Length: 312
Image (tube, one colour):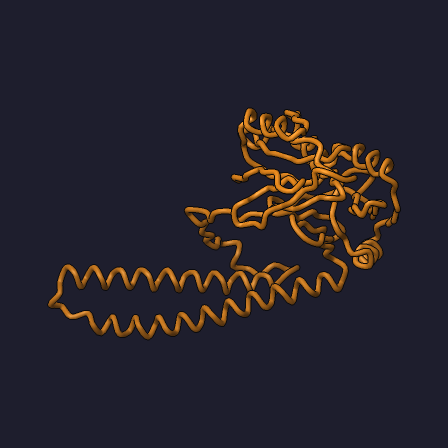
């Protein structure tokens, strides 16, 4: 992610492509204190980023991507800010530090480029039998597979007729083109109906899961959610899904307006806005112990420093 830093009217302005400028105060109680350039080990390579911290060391904004240390350090020195270079030993250590949000925290999102080669899933022999637990999901998958094969068959037939027309123009393949035109209209209608059925079924299923207290969502970006499936607690983020061994939830709020959720015995910190009623229903429905706490600033700093992992 490329971004530009500037100072305008006692504010630190962070300009990010395809995102409104973020203005962070340089004066007042929750003002910018430090520019942090950090790195931590990722999958096969080191990941870098830039974080803006307040005077207590809490994160006001974080943006991934490698940046010039000299340029950031020079900018901080010119504007009376502290500069820090930190290399975290593990990804967990980095996530714990970046999840400690300041009252003036701002989220920065950006559009990721699409994959150059989309993955094509081909159904195997085992997918031909509907599972015992989720037949509705199986039928949706079969519908998607059928549409995929129809599109592939249409593409192969169209390419074959084009090649045949180029190699032997006098053979006359216009009848085939007419049939392909009719097939294209039918395929478009079937695809539209199938997509509407799949999307509608998925949305109804999501709403039903939330109503049944099987899914608990974090409000706003970056998105994550807790899902209860067959007495298992799963955490779903934009990057991965993993199982969590936990029997309690701690919903906290701080005097400054910061809030979040701690899963387990200080095992996982999920900062952000969580609906208290949804959290209460989710805990009661899935047999989880729930504690609601109102923290002071010192208690918040102590709690978020003791967790073992986090999702910023």
